[in-house]
Length: 256
Image (cartoon, rainbow, N blue to C red):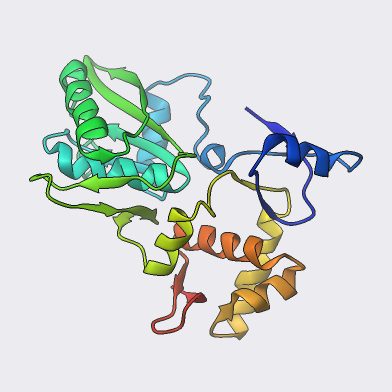
């Protein structure tokens, strides 16, 4: 649901509701959306085959993944924690790699998914689901909201180790240590985008056409942001998949 807040920066982190409200009184209101609601709306007017077809045409992204079936809960746990540690997303089960709806047994998939979310995710990851029916076949659409209880770790099959995963573009990966530290410290919790997000993104893309890299301090000065907010925004762009960290240069970013 839309939440009305005021921000002087492009990003903010809500560490306490009462403190936030007191700091925002008497400012002009803008309407923003939580990151987990930004690209893939959780409130679809109707969950039908045409919605699924549009997702298939768009392809996998930082908030959308397709699976034929859930046959390995420990492996699926990586997807669950990656979505929960980032913007949230949707996992569509019953669609093969080429985009064909092959159908699944919804109850069986729910059983395997619950096992993945509770046994192989630490802490457990929240999820909900809807189903899509087309010509007698069913796909299960699993929604994983962005967690405010980060970090989440995926436990391996033997339950001897666990790793932190994030979603970058269409892949679930173990992030660089600098990003892991931000997640562990709670620096990416309660992050919201403001209306200036797209213009900021465009100006950064234009800057990187002429320059090979940008650090947090330079980006903060360029956009008149605090450095913590600048760092969160750069990491968010990294999750989209068009920025990456430069090797051997902490918190210095370049185009992919």
